[in-house]
Amino acid sequence: MTLTEHALRGAVLAAGETCRLAVGLPWYRSMPVSAVLGIDLTIDGEAVPDLHLRLESRSVPVDELDRVEDLAWFLQDRATLEWRAPAPSDAVADVVLRVRLQLPNLVVPGGTAVQVLQEVRGAVPVETVPVGTVP
Image (tube, rainbow, N blue to C red; front, side):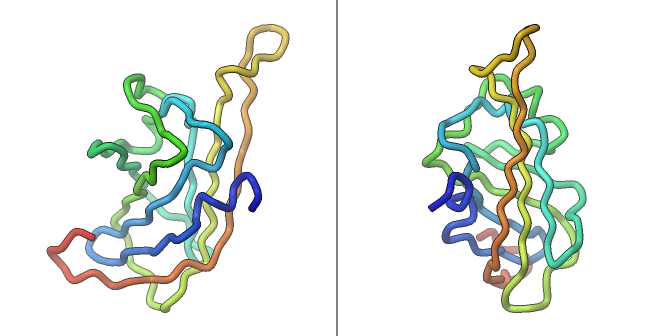
């Protein structure tokens, strides 16, 4: 298994009023959530808008993750990506997950932390969730 493959291992896209996809951190060690500089999700070639990350019962818009200083994403944790958009209609969705990380313990001369972009691709089964239920 590669460094990033585990991020979508066992993933199921719960399609409903709010769509959900549980993902792992595509890195080899746990990170503070503030080190997650961006998350992009593409399903069947379409970018997912207004994405939120739910971790430890908190839901945070992905463009605000770098401001969350009191939460960590541990390797064993599955965070849930949530969004309201049309659900995929096929039984399997082509998913591309891109996570941009700032590595707080790896600093280049001049004091800037190194950033990496991790990309994970996979065919993920889609499970329709009845309206009004939470998977």
